[in-house]
Amino acid sequence: MRKKMILSWIFVFLWMILIFLLSDMTGTKSHELSKGNIENTLTTVIEKTNDLGITKPEKNQTQKISDIAEFLNYPIRKGLHVTEYFILTLLLYHAFHQSGVKNKKAMLFSLLICFLYACSDEFHQLFRQRTSHFSDVVIDTCGGMLALFFLYFRQKKKKINNFSNLKKF
Image 1 (cartoon, rainbow, N blue to C red):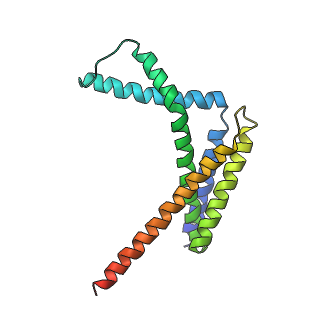
Image 2: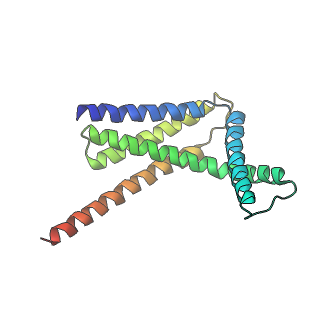
Image 3: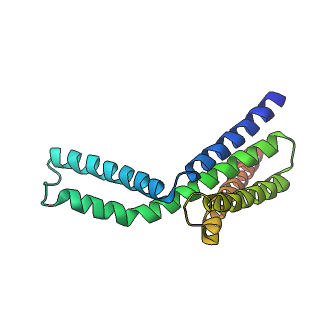
């Protein structure tokens, strides 16, 4: 049991380090990296659909892909923020749960740390030639709240299933 607890906290800290390292990039580098990944994905999909005859190559296809990638960059980046804090909150909840913290307290502590880490992340970005907005903290915290909703509904489903199994007897 103690090994599981220690391992769960190690995963929390590793995930926090990953978030820190991603935030440590300059704004320009981060923007270019995400836009480049979107362009590569779109290019691969379009090339495959062209090869299969689903689509046909067009004039200025490279420029169109770049324009679409630029358009998608912002919402995809914010979606990734939600996802990384969703995962952080799940990891925190699991670590608290493994440490013997009861369900509601584990949820509350997990969300609180998620919020505080999002705040510290935005503060950190001030020193990396990036913008820092409270709206990003809200977006990150929404990822944590979604994780808690996920956990809550998963637990409700388990209770319903357990109750259904009891009725069979």
